[in-house]
Amino acid sequence: MKNERLIKAAFKRGFEYEETYRGCAQCTVAAIQDTLGIRNDFVFKAAGGFAAGGGMLCDGICGGYAGGIMMMSLFFGRRRNKFDDDRDENYHSFHMAGALRDRFINEYGTILCGAIHGKIFGRSFDLWNKEEKDQFEEAGAHADKCTTVVAQSSAWATEIILQEIEKGGLDIRDFAHLIHLLE
Image (cartoon, rainbow, N blue to C red; front, top):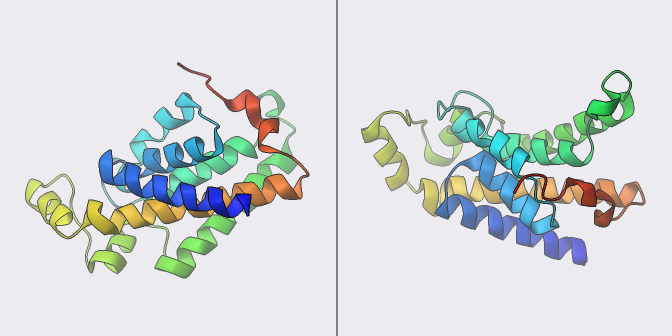
């Protein structure tokens, strides 16, 4: 029940953040962070360049997907202090990323930004071209299209994180060391 409430909250925040602030990867990161109470400004900032497939070029992975992977790996990923010997944690993050990928493939048929645009808009856009960016917005990018992709990614990644926390017999408070590393 609590997890369901958190997953819905992540969806709502993801939608609202993308609608208001833009930047799919950062909006996904912020939605998950705020929902789970694990704020890390370094991770938020690092997500910036992933917007619209990376550099707003739409030819890389979806920013919502990238932000979700970043947050899942923050919880369960290879640790720097065990760089040479943390295989289990590293593979844990790989499996989580694969689970998020499966959700994207089932819903959109791809994890690539431009191909997702093709599915939800019927075409991709050159976001560095003012005319095309205006068309992107007029087609509902931040009304219901990309907002929904970010919302869905935020919810899916949150669900996967919560499942892994539960499976490991852990509690969100076990990750308190991730909070407020830059303010």
